[in-house]
Image 1 (cartoon, rainbow, N blue to C red):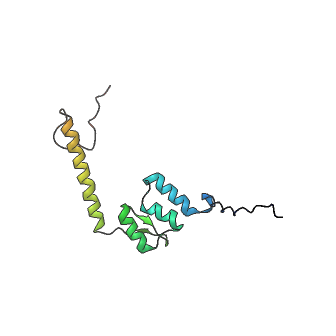
Image 2: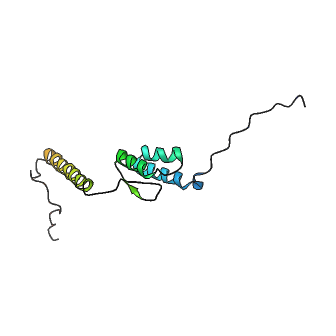
Image 3: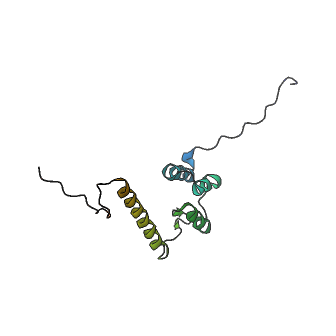
Length: 121
């Protein structure tokens, strides 16, 4: 028995992603939105965040995230919703301004939502 060399125990392989629905959720989130604080939390802790943690994570990543109680946080309230609309319209105005600036044939006013009708063939 003096000639047997003991080898250290091999670390256990991590379980497949199918065994952990939270891992699948994290992978889906990363695929859709990129790696951020929420997906890192899911992968590191292997669970969804508590509602308080989800509130903070949602504000950090700028999206609503699912908490351990199954609800999405941060909650949308009347103070959040108008700000989102205002930001959206500011971005649209900037886009129209940029489009008008580089196209001399486009009128200087914002384009209508519908394209002009095509002449009949």
